[in-house]
Length: 198
Image 1 (cartoon, rainbow, N blue to C red):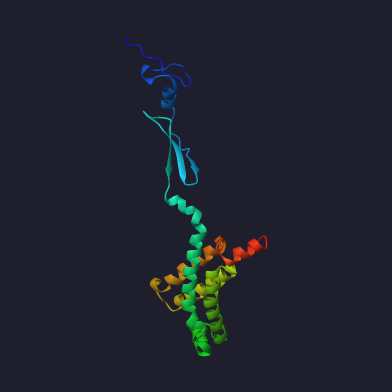
Image 2 (image 1 turned 120 degrees about the horizontal axis):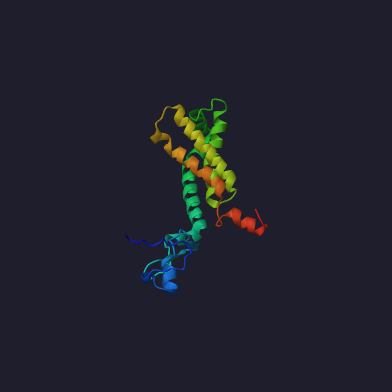
């Protein structure tokens, strides 16, 4: 008849011979946990095994870009804003004939010249304000309206996705940035700092 060793209970002071004592034994009894402490661009964890309980710090290269979020918003604003100005310039400076054609094409049978003029203002002026970060959220609204109008125009004309996808994508971009804001490198932010809040 074989004698079976009673199972080891949690918290029991009994130790196996190969466990050792002291710090190494305590380390080997540790379980791997998911608790990692993120501090800026460094992550700290615990290594278990022969070199258990060894702290390590490893720089996270890409995470260092977090501190440049405002610079990223600046690049996004200037790039998109200038692009919208280039698209809007011929519409705004096309004169009454161009405004009427634009308004009629966009589906405004009533006062097409007026609506065409506002379309040029929204696209060119909105792009300028967007790039500078001045009246940023009103500019986002103007550009969002412009993109939604272009989207509806394509859909009414029966165009495919490849034709209206550009307007759809930019509509999502301007809608999202409406909540994000212009960032620190903007006229709105500078005016807000001088006035004690904007």
